Amino acid sequence: MGPVEKLLSTSAQLYEHLTVIPEGDERDSYIEKIDGLLEKRGQLLEQVMASESVSLEGHQLTPHLIELDQGIQSRLKKVMTVIKTDMKNLQQSKKSEQTYLNPYGNVRVMDGMYYDGKK
Image 1 (tube, rainbow, N blue to C red):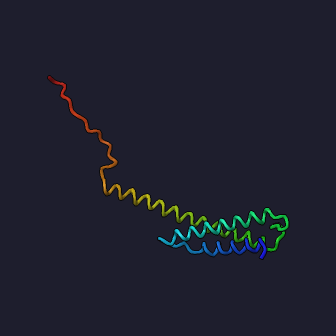
Image 2: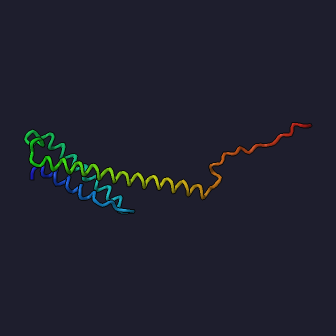
């Protein structure tokens, strides 16, 4: 299997992995696998670009690679949107929990002493 075929295989694995976004504790391993596949794909792409004997220009698999890359990018954007939404909801829930525990925490009142000016 040549480097272009390996790149295509890794891209296809990543594309398939991005089809379903898990919830809860499974998400950490899901993100780690995405990171690993992206790292592997990046190394293969660098290897193909550095190789003088293999070129993506004019290769028969290049259109398929481009199509997969576009699909991967759109699915990664969806994953990022879901993660950002979850992080925003987590921050909001932390804030509302703090407000519930200490309802007067945001009130800035300077308690002072009263001095009577009359003698």
